[in-house]
Image (cartoon, rainbow, N blue to C red; front, side, top):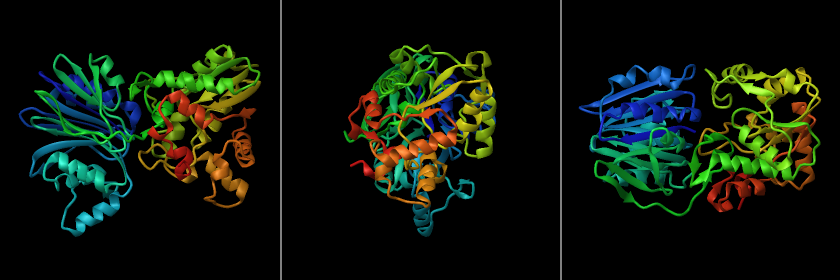
Amino acid sequence: MSGIFGIVSNKNCANDLLYGTDYHSHMGTEYGGMAVFGKQFYRSIHDISTSQFKSKFYDDYKEMKGHLGIGVISDRDPQPLIIGTKFGNFAIAVAGLIENVNELGSELLKEGETFGEMSSGGINSVELIAKLITRGRTIPNGIEGVYDRIQGSASILLLKKDGIFAARDRLGRTPLVIGEKDGEFAIATETCSFLNLGFQIKKYLDPGEIVFVGKSGLEEKSPGKKTNQICAFLWIYTGYPASSYEGISVELVRERCGRALAKNDEVQADLVAGVPDSGVGHAIGYAMQSGLPYRRPLVKYTPGYGRSYTPPSPEMRDLVATMKLIPVKEVICGNRIVLCEDSIVRGTQLKNYTIKKLWECGAKEVHIRPACPPLMFPCRFALSTRSIKELAARNAIQALEGRDTNELKDYIDQRSKKYQRMVEWIAKELGVTTLRYQKIDDMVEAIGLPREKLCLYCWVGDYDI
């Protein structure tokens, strides 16, 4: 999932744009980019797969002067892009995933359209969205046309010389929020980007809502809808602890998830810990409920190492996973450890670079407690989970069935024997003492939104009616 940030200021916006965008760095590891409008458009894009956003843009932003700007941390395509259109020049940044980008691109090519931005030999989905927008009568009409045609999700920031159009994904799977300070406005995926810059939350955009933010303030261009299916994984893993979505704190949800795990657990242990960083909040909640001491057998070497889950190549994921967590042998040796994790996606990093370190340092028992149910389906709306083959639960099912199968209902039902066999297989594969997943109803209750307002696709697919 990418993160986007925009600002409409009454002074040079480059400083706030740099740091506001940087506060989205946990959302992607491929590209970072910023565009500013002053006397003209200024834009800079860098590969951030091997370095931090700030270090790449620290010199660039000093050359960017203007009152309007957008920035992006991208998990896939280089962006923002600057496009010349019948609406005038504009810069555009997008958070989301377009499943039918190739089909739509082929349609436009047959109609005589051209594409200048190619990503890894394919069509840049941000450019595709820009081309579709220009087919509308107006920019808002063009954005609505995008939502009529795409399969997937897209929240959009579109920068013109007089302001920024902000549009939230039609089903609200990706968040977008407006902040304000002293007549200045910011638009962001993550509310944590507001806090140290002095912005106060003014409005969470509704699904499908389109607004224009200019010098005169906030102007609604298209009303939002009440049909909402925001990604539940934002609270469990993707989002930053200091952020909130729909007014619901990420950190508090994680604490409630941890409490729910402890309520359903009877394991005897000496301490509870969280896999840094996103497992920490869950572990704190578990400790609060269970009375077990919260300790740190694993500490993250923060400088230089981001999330091991987001890099696209397995080699880079493994390298980050190997290097970022340092075991504290004196805390581990001889202890029975409950280890809270946000989720188990592939399971290989947890097994080879986390659990292995605990055993090597003399752990007596290792009990894994993921804060969400087994992931069953690749995400269709963001790059949260990429393929069936990468999911530990699906590998377990294939091993148990002796073949690929799409009959997953019993494996999703946490009361069934097939579900129990799957969990036992994963536990054996990980090499842990016990494994117990979060119940989906407890996860939904911890978030605090009605089930129908959450996207739970990666856990239940189309089985959730």
